[in-house]
Image: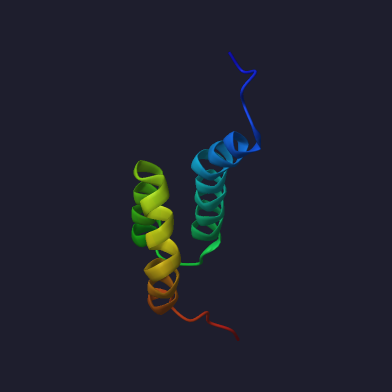
Length: 77
C-alpha cells in the first residue's frame, strides 16, 4: 500500500497539516501573550480555535495591530 510513496507525499502532508498547525500554535501563543482586555482576547481565541487556518491568517493580518491599539497604557509611578 505504501510502497509507491515518494518524497512529494511527505511535502503534501507537511503542507496540509504541519504548517497550519504551526501557524495556529503561534497565533494562540501570541494571543495569550497579548496584554489586552479579556473580551477581544477571548474572541480571537475562539475564532482561531474554531477556524484554525483562516483564524490564524486573520490574526496575523489584522488581529495583532487591533489588540495593540486597544491595549491601555500601563500606569507607572
